[in-house]
Length: 381
Image (tube, rainbow, N blue to C red; front, top):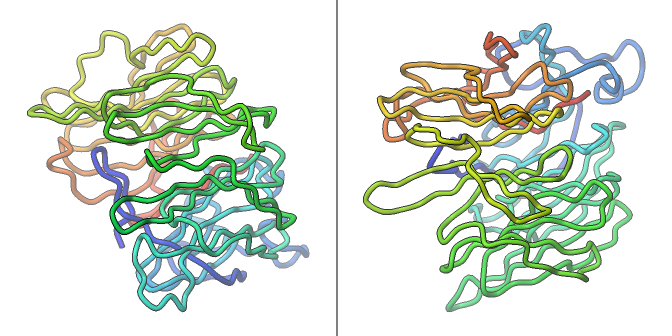
């Protein structure tokens, strides 16, 4: 199943639900297991240096692997997650890198579909899995609390004549469950917690456009922070110092537009990510730990670039290609490698096959996988 995020569209990734095992399934690479020194492979990767963690889709199970930037040909298997046929997992790495939360459709789902009730579960470094819910939305990845003790997921309860109600749920690893907020007038999407855990940022989408809100984990203090757009926004991502949120604005019409913007959370000021830029489209903002922001861009004549905006506002071209488009996904913690989806084609209308690569600060590339059905879970430190 194609799970690629390609500029104007999210490929509908699937999901997993179920049992985690140490597995060597799938892929064209050599797999390491770290069995000789005791402990799980996940435990032995803790503190071993930067690793890109990805989930590799297969028809009935996804494999979560860690890729060493120093040797991308060797993948270390962390877990294999069974799921409903044709539907892969959505997974995110905990802040400490010692657990993975995911949404998944159980393997025995009678009629798998994107809006079928999904499970939310967490697998720890010790290999143990904790099932936290079985009635949440598949397509919205979990958001971790800063202390790694809970996740936020979305639950949609449709009604006969409308999209119904949307809940953001706080699921504790201790089994607790709290409804943070409920909306019937808009679809809602969790973005990230403030570093101290005092508030959760989330976005709303409805016929009036897109707004940004914050709310405390206990549901108090819900506040509208800004009107982001009269139309659709997506790709929301909080800066490392929690001072800004970058996002993609999608404007429909005779000439559709995609533009990356950033909002100052202290002042509410919204600005272009690339000041004065003349690109045809921008998308997929990704922050580096030092505050640099990298966005993908399509040029007016076709072809793509990855543009980095420094903390001083200066822009540099990290990559440039005539017949491909680079979609930034996630910087490593040390800022040395950018996980990127590379999409064949000069424009979004010509988008073809894609794959994931690591790109360093000089623009040098390493291919992580030949498959399009790979999602980035996060970076181990």
